[in-house]
Image 1 (cartoon, rainbow, N blue to C red):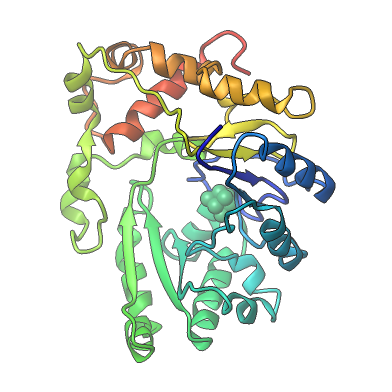
Image 2 (tube, rainbow, N blue to C red):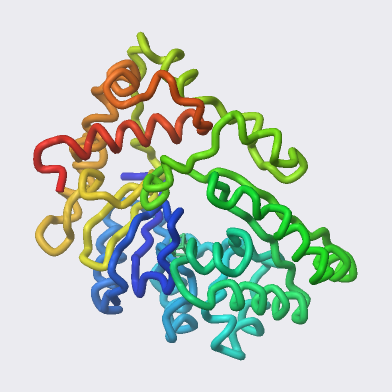
Length: 340
Ligand code: SF4
């Protein structure tokens, strides 16, 4: 038995195709309510506390989002589904009842992601019109007494647009408007984790030489960043390995019913099994026994092997250490037989 289990169904998917998406690109498909219900009930055999969420990517994206929220509550067992500081800016722009509905939750701040001006934002969100929708969502949140927070993912490609975003914040009076609601407007930039779609940004990744051009005031987690070459030097002789098995696991269930641990991208080498063909007992045994390609590698392949095989000992690119080790692990797994 597990202390508690959280399961999240990738039901409906996401209207966006962000170039930084750590989960990767997956088709937008619905999972029948009957299937989500049966699977959720089956999980109760393995824990007295099961939390069920009906989204992995964009919360509240499908038209029946209210029904799905009620379903999450019904299917969760001795736990409540969680609301995060996340909303669907797609829905805010299309559904007049949505913001009113959001007000029932004890969440007063919602995070939106911007990449610079209109051209860069539309490009990185992967959807034409995204920039205007984010601006409109910002205004609608404020008009309804809710607080927007903006985050910006940085690469060498958009680093010179940070000032444009700061000008936008000023032009839209976001600081004053939040202050009028008794809150502080927050804007921060960061690099994100290098997995999923963000792996494709490796060549554009910011380096040490970019640091002076970014104000420390806005650069979240800057002090924890370390160059790739320093990570490689640090671990070149290390016999360290990792193990993610927990008594309180979170599992993502894809629209095709593949089960993944909530750790990094939903790539085939992380799959614990498929609930169309494998029993939940097998899937959870694979998790606990580190039997997927990735968990097996994670517990057996040392940091030394990873950095020596896939790291660049001359690279000045800046990463969070564990994110970068996961990136190397994903590269290692990608090359293994049967990884796809
Ligand atoms: S980052 Fe979020 S909004 Fe963007 S594609 Fe991924 S799940 Fe969707």
